[in-house]
Length: 316
Image 1 (cartoon, rainbow, N blue to C red):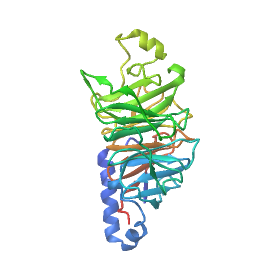
Image 2 (image 1 turned 120 degrees about the vertical axis):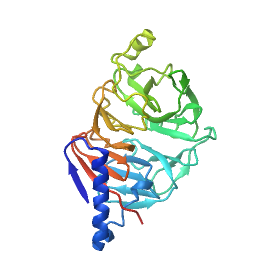
Image 3 (image 1 turned 135 degrees about the horizontal axis):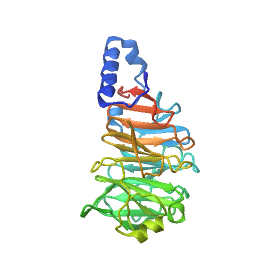
Image 4 (image 1 turned 180 degrees about the horizontal axis):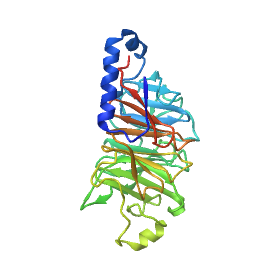
């Protein structure tokens, strides 16, 4: 069942839809039987596009070719806390197992193998593929920092300490590679933390706030005042997503909802209001964004102006 909303959605709206659908299923056995092939969204942790296909980790791996309305189970690599892909390598998917490390699939998630040689034996909190190079990966290791692989995950090297914000270091809980003209060489690594957003050029020279202008100007300015970021202060940025072809359009998932930036993270506005666990953006269409929230999947085809809610039903 899908329901279309044409305004910013509140958590109350979202819960009302979920409860109403559950009541309908209880009163109509045929309705419940028709939706048993869906994943259990309440158990979902990770979401990504593989080309036009959506992949979800929720008590097994699931694939959807229609933006989250219908699903087919495709494998069971165990609980994954993050997934990432690159549009230049369809079918190649990287994931973070709950127990730690990195795994890779060459067949769209049906089979997997470990790719963590050289990574410390510690939990991995976030994973991203370089926007310009499908063999280059970045992993945020809990309590440690950023590690990089230049051979599609086969070997890893340490490249950056954790960002220092508000007087202490913070773990990175989300990552995105942004091929934006204001970076050194055009490439930025954006990082979500428990207290907001930061970024570093892919030279890994210094973490810095997201500001207008060129990266070199920001580095030379040092501690000079910068334009404020309009994401909520001291709120965890649990997910970052964008279409590689539209690096200025970035979506962020926070407890307060889905936030959207049209200027590579300098200014933000909220386009949906419910707790977000994961986000995915269609690699060929920056306006097609899918959000995993409490109780269900939400899909927008117009950059967050309107949303289809696919309410929760337990999977097989």
